[in-house]
Length: 601
Image (cartoon, rainbow, N blue to C red; front, side, top):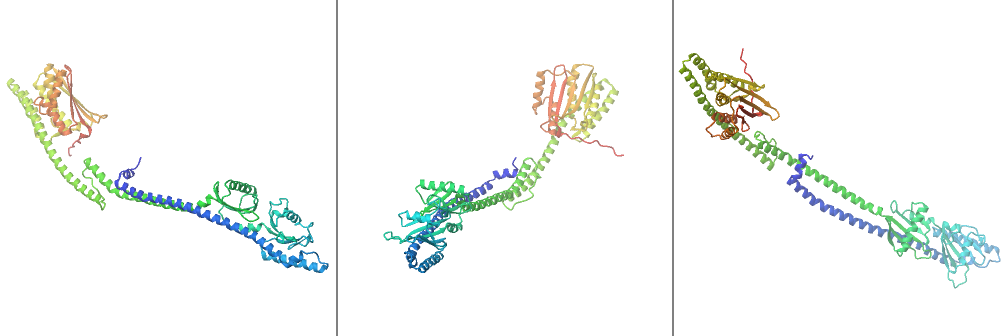
């Protein structure tokens, strides 16, 4: 069940207004964040694609520059006199031939050092059939490891030839090296004197790309035209990397060899050199690497929005609680005033309109309390006057009946009975007139009824027995004085005496109906009773407060309502020949139990 505070938040106009203001400020921020993230993502992707293309172009330019450099060096060095002299017929003098060969080897060695990034330079003499190398001793073509390469070149009509690992698969030395071969002289219309070879280790290309960082899963690969790797930064195994490259190249060819395309969750840049080697450069950047920076931006924006929302929620709760406390105090006071608790006060006052309202409610409650006290005093005085007026209706009626009885005994000259009767009559007058209290204990009223019934027994031949059964502590219950005497008198004169029996019985019973929280008083007689038609007529007369008939019953009913409120009820139950039952029901919380007074020793 939601707490009253959160229920207040859902209903408060001010809190709703603050939430709307927060929404008005947060929604544009969310849209701005979304646009920023989208723009940053597309911008980062474009920039990465651009940089990736530039990287591939730069690497292609390096490869082409190296190949063009090989061509230029071959043309340049093949024209050197030292090389030209070594490619002629052997001298008759052995010494001169050795000097020429040493000079050529020295030139090749110097050239390999000057060029850099090459494994070695070799020159094949078509006249002598020897191969001179910057790294190996001179040897005949049939004994040199380069022999198969020379034979492969000589069988080709081309003036230059580039060999990689796919050119001659069975050639062991081509697995780790690539070789450029050119005709000497380069012009094919001149007689060929020999062949120049420039060899380079593939790990030279590996060194060039190892420092290129493309993220944790990105890679750049240099491939032969058939897809064999020359150098790669991929961290996959050889088999997995081979399958990855094959898939990329297949897709690339299917798409018409574009410079860039998407493959699975990666962006691929591919370009092939335009020189004689035809090598392919493949650069792969996973999309995850692209979104890493945008992810940082997104997380920053999300954190910022989360902090803003938390601060906004805290502000709403704080403002709501600041508004809730004085409003709840005012609400509690209004509810208390509505329930009649006019002594309730607002203790704390906010320095705003709510505080002014609380002060006004305090002033109003004080004024209402004063008016209620005055009204209560007026009502109490009015009630006392009405009870006295009703009680005064009983006294003359009772005195008239008693005096008439004394008159009857005086006519009979029964002075003993007159004396006894007068004694009891004086006691009854003292109880009814000298006791100025408007309420008495039920036990006192019963004592008074004993004397009253005794007086009646002296007046009439029918002897009436009065018995009672009173549940504790209802004997000390406060009731209006002389409220039962008219009921007993009604039972005697309208029920028992008309029956003309020698004896009659009247019983008084008081008990608590705990289930209904009511106190019940029952006065029952064994008189004639009334038929249903007469009973209904009697009930109608009792409902009319201004009726002049049945003054005793009506008087008692009105006095009970004045003392115990409108909930007090009187019910008459009878049947012809069955006596009369008068049942009085009072609210239990309206009853006062008076403690017994003890005499001082």
